[in-house]
Image 1 (cartoon, rainbow, N blue to C red):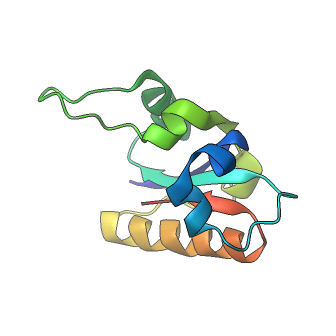
Image 2: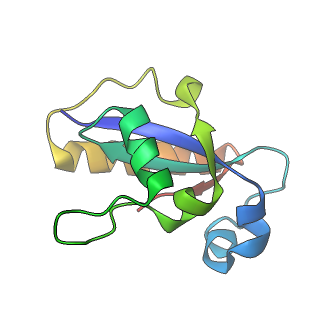
Length: 112
């Protein structure tokens, strides 16, 4: 099972991270900066992995650098209504759809 989750980021990400800024030309500074992801863990476990900079057994970093540096907390109100899905492909599709929907609402959003 895969769950979609949303993390609120510090607004510093917008001023300090060029690629984040370029990905969000619609952002007007009013709403929050967000990270949208998907996980086979609980959103809380995944958030903790991002913040700790968790490595796999082979030493591969599985945390987002943006969340590691700028992540504040989970925004349950933006994802709790989305049911878990069974396939990775479906989760990736929903992750992208949610990220683009939030951008249309004028949030600044990062997703992979």
